[in-house]
Image 1 (cartoon, rainbow, N blue to C red):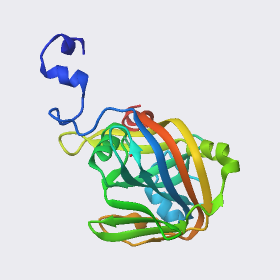
Image 2: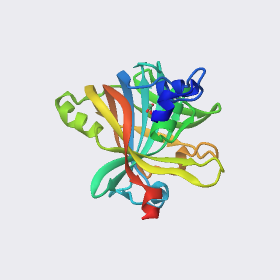
Image 3: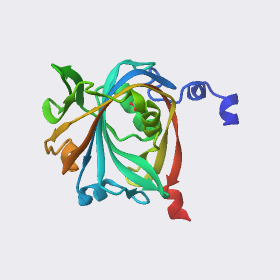
Length: 260
Ligand SMILES: CC(=O)CC(=O)O
């Protein structure tokens, strides 16, 4: 690195901003501050077989085959601007502690998709998620190339959970893990294979609501949102909150474990 500091101009941009493309980087360097994020979360029970199929060891699925699918309306984000994201996760344990493993995500904006994939290893893909209040119903949808593949609904702010904000704020900070996977340039050898903990900062929950929820997902070869089928819906929630994202931590390195 010292050599690089002393020499050529090509390294100046690297030290300043190590993100492709160099002429106009695809995303701004964080931290990214999220304000007034509206979230619809549906927690459901899936099948043991489907859950096991998406959970990489050494993670273990938690009791009950609990899966969450959540819509996040990012109304105000520094650097990225507004966008909508769906995260699909499984409740797991890692080293005996509860964690959330995010196994797929769909976004409608390129910049946070690339930042999430390249830096943290978020399994983000392009889709057309929407979160809207239609009549009295909060409605989350996902279209993939124009074809609708998911629909989640719940009454808008029906049951106020103001008396549980501290507890729910803690829940929101349950360790979130993603699997960062990158091949080497030979297009074959794994270069990065890591479980990454996504750090959340400055979490501030401003409102939370519960209520009955419905979830419908359609099998689609290109967008496997229905790969974890709904056995029964357990809970619907809405949150309004702020947070900051910036970095992560490697909690398990598969390539290093193999070398040992
Ligand atoms: C950088 C990110 O990974 C942002 C997000 O979760 O949308």
